[in-house]
Image (cartoon, rainbow, N blue to C red):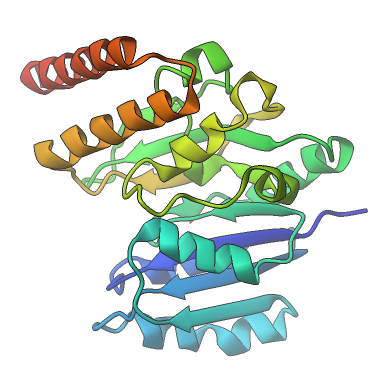
Length: 252
């Protein structure tokens, strides 16, 4: 039986990018999915663009749900999407990210034969503002690496709905690394699968030094709360991550 996918996009003032994002979902050849957009009460033309796609999804007989209201951050928006989702597998696609052709078909093929897996990841390209590849996420999930750093891209990840039923939804006190914290909850019990092909492109968008520091601090907190790394080791890894980041900036 073909799995039903729920693809969730959170948006806010995304008029420049969301049309390409929605189109990449709409153009998938695998159509047993629903698309859910949670907009944060955008003040630009985002909502009008979202609304324009309603008749197109209806014509293709694909469920298309969206709401526009204030939220308290990305994980609050994702949790709203989870409440609406009815799929067996759930994915989160940024409002400036895209799926490549036949991506959902690739996930479906592996999901059909592995219904008890928790997570399916894939190769993902990180694209900078000049549309050049800045980084490639190309490794499968491995606990010994993941408990140290976020080594996968959420854009290329499909989560089994059973995982949320067992481990809960996103912790909204996190603002940047809530997806990392969620997957840390299962620890080495998580059952992953990997597609050794590119399925998505995510935009870098440019991040400030302050954002990076906050992300590393949240990752440190997540590792401590998971109970697999003591505070001292987590602090050492935090410092090491910062040094590695600043050195990479100097080299560039």
